[in-house]
Every structure is written in C-alpha cells, then in structure tokens.
Length: 129
Image 1 (cartoon, rainbow, N blue to C red):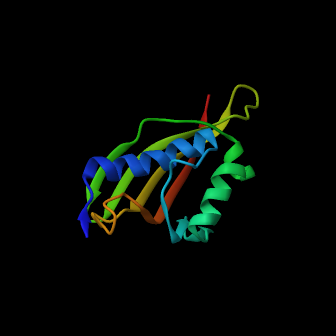
Image 2: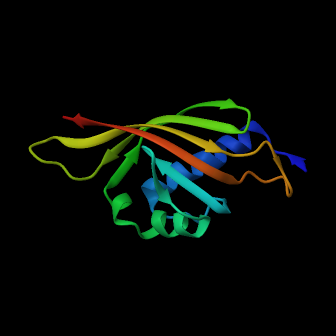
Image 3: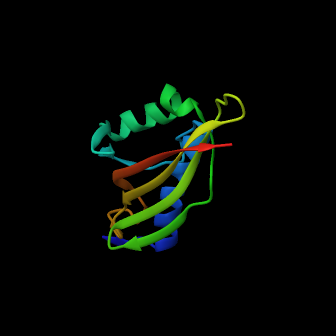
C-alpha cells in the first residue's frame, strides 16, 4: 500500500464537486463499488453509475455553480462543506442547497492514487434572491 497525501485526497473530492457543475466526470476516480447516500437514500449504486449520473443525469443539469468548499479530514474521510447554486430562477429567486458531504478516500492505496470509495451527503435547501 502506498500513502495518499491529504492534498491528493482533497483534489479527488474537488474533482467530484467540479464534475457536478461541468457534467464531465472524467477526472473523478471512483472505486467500482462506490455508493452515494444522500439524506439517507442511496442515489449512487456503483462507480460506473456515478460517472453516468454526473455526465448525463438530469438532476445535475440544474446545477450552475458550487461555492469553494471548506475541507476537513478525519482518518479516511474527507469532508467538504459548500453550496450548490442552481440555474432555474423564478421571480429572481432560485432554490439552492447547503451541502455537507463526506467522501471516504483512503489514506493508503494499492497504486498511490486517491479513489473515492463512498459518499455521504447531507443537503439543506435554501432560497437565493
């Protein structure tokens, strides 16, 4: 096993957040059995499913931007706290979300690369004026 730096682990989480906005997951490394749990519900069923969802999922097409995350690391978990800004606007208001997402990205890897093994997301909607 080779160590994975904190910088590389944060970069792996940031690649996922960037893909939410760009709809291009080519820079994101998921383990094949990676799952995503959002507010207690499984929304990602494998690494391949997560790639397809980020690239073509209609739920992500509404996203126009993400704020710069605040990161913290605890063991194998990389926590990112940020906001998602959506495209649709009605009367100058849009529904956005505060996101608190924990990525399990092991500090040790067979190839020394940062790989996302699990994602747990908490989301709290808010109205942006």
